[in-house]
Length: 170
Image 1 (tube, one colour):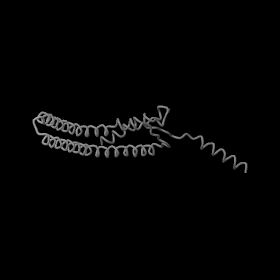
Image 2 (cartoon, one colour; image 1 turned 90 degrees about the horizontal axis):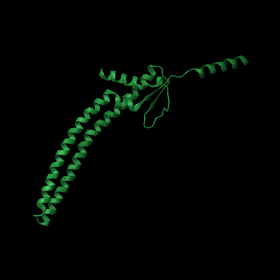
Image 3 (cartoon, one colour; image 1 turned 120 degrees about the horizontal axis):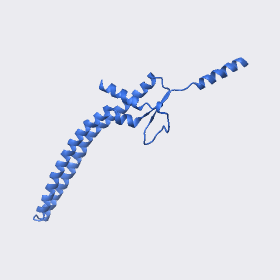
Image 4 (tube, one colour; image 1 turned 30 degrees about the horizontal axis):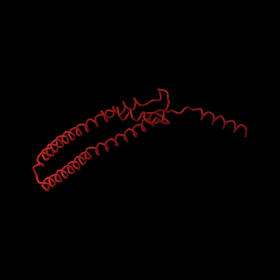
C-alpha cells in the first residue's frame, strides 16, 4: 500500500512539473497590421471617399439653392415664401435620409467582412495552437490587456501576422 501511494505521489509530482506551452497574441495588432485588413480598408475607403464627394457636391448645391431662396424670399408674399421654405425643408430631410441609407449600404458590407476577418483570425490561431502543441494561447489588446507581462518568446503576434499574410497572398 505504501509503495502504491509513493508511486502515485511521484506520478502526480512529475505530471504537475511538466511545463505547459503557452503563448499570446496581440489581437489589435494582428487585425490592424494584416494585409487582408489593409486591403479591405482601402477598398471601402475608395467607396467612402466617392460617397463623401457626392454628398459634399449635393450639399453645396442645396446650400446655394437655399441662399438663392433667402434672397428671393424678401420679394415673395409670406404664404409663397412659407411654402417654398417647407419645400426646402422636405428636400433637406429627403437628402439626409438618402445619405444615411447610402452610408449604411457602404458600412454594412464592410462590417460583415470585418466580422468574417476576425473569425478567420480566431480560427487560424486555434489551428496554429493545435498544430504547434500549445496548451493555451491568450489574446490581448492594448486598451484592456489580459497579459500584463510575458517573456517575448511567448508573443506569437508577428508569427501569426506573417502566416496570415502568406496564406492571404496565396
